[in-house]
Length: 261
Image (tube, rainbow, N blue to C red; front, side, top):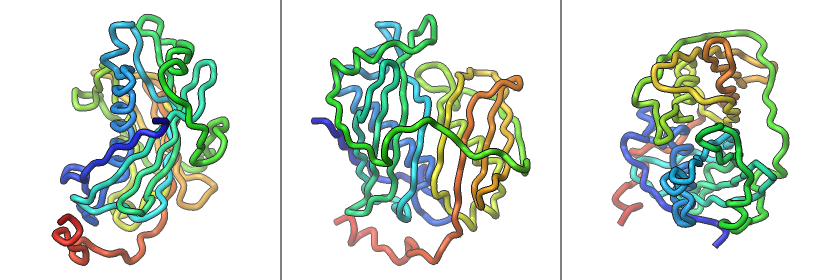
C-alpha cells in the first residue's frame, strides 16, 4: 500500500484552550507520528536504523491549514506517503482529515544520516523498501525559500532541556516551533489563526545548548520570519502566515455525545 493511514483522537494536551480545538503544532506532531508508524511497518523505524548506525531527520516542512481545526475528542485521520526520491532526499506528502473535512496538507523533505559522520546516505535503502506514490499534494517539490525579514518585532533565548530532546538525543523539531510561537504576543495569537507554516531545519542542537529566536515582520501582510540560532549560527528558519479569526462554531455548539456514539 503506497499511502499509509492512521487515525487519532484529539487529546486534552493537544487542545488550544482558546477554542477547544487542535493546536496547529499538534497537527504536525500527529503527521510525524504517522510517518514513524509508516516507517515501522517497513522495518525502517528509528530503532530499526540505529543498529545500522543510521537515523532519520526532517530537513524541510510545509503545512497549510485548509479548514478550522477539529475539536477535542474528535477523530482525525492522517494520510502520508513517500512521493519522491532523489539521490539523497526523501520527500513525503500528507493530508489530515476529520470526517470528510480536509483541514491540513503539506509535504516534508527527510534525510537518513550516518550516525558517525552526520551526513546523508543514499536513498537506495528507501527505494528498496517503500513504494513511491507519485502524488504531490502541493505541486512539484521546489527549492525551499522564505520571505525576507523587514523589521524585528521580538526575540527570546531558550536553553535546551530534557523535554526538548527526542529519541535521537538531539532537539525535537517541534521544540523549535514552540520557541518561535512564544515570540508572538498572546493577544495576537488569540485574535489570529495560523494559516500556514514553512520550516527549514539547518543543524542539530543538543541538551544544554542555548538557542536564540528573533522574529521579524516581512513585506507580506501577516507573515513573519522566526530565525533561530546557536552562537550566531543558523539552526532553523520558520515562516508563519496568519489570518484573523472569524466567527466559528464553539465546542458548546458541537455535541460530543452525538458525534462520538
